Image 1 (cartoon, one colour):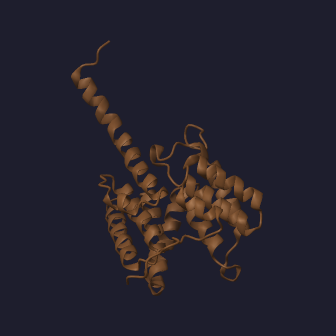
Image 2 (tube, rainbow, N blue to C red):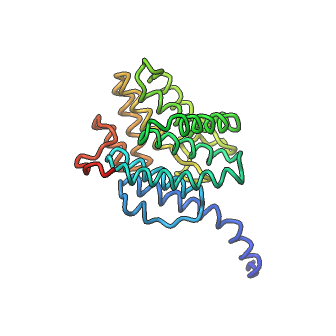
Length: 247
């Protein structure tokens, strides 16, 4: 049976937002995975969530390259987006988490801003966890800090490893595990991040076979991922030929 023009338009209006969101998210994640900073920066996106993710990913490239001026610009742009969204929808879990991530990046650039960005980021993380205590991206934030921090300051790679592993098993309303979800489908992102940091947590615990398995799973999701390759090589988030700081 042929669909009428009105029915076709109605169908398009129903499916287009999700398709568009998936496409925009994938564009950001693919450019970041291949470390194509110019391509990532040039993306024109409509969804504020992916606009914020775009700025977060840009800063994640600029910070280890010690391009602090560009990193600060990206973080500030991302915070403008998240702050505006949260003014309208203060219980938007994904914007709360992206805001917390961006606040954390600001601390990496300007540690003296702890009283502002540090407190606000932690408040946003806690709010998101109250609203969605099983959110995998909240686990990513907390677990990453546990891997990076020395034990003296509360670091605990074992707790982080367990946190990442649990987050990857979280199931959606259709019973699909987060680790098995299509990249960016229904707003799902960070599977590769979780697997990468799971590998880093295992590596820090000298569990090299488990680390290799986690990295392999990450590469199955995102082949030739630049950041996973750095982790496999035992390196941090630094480019080999990073430019001189420009701040």
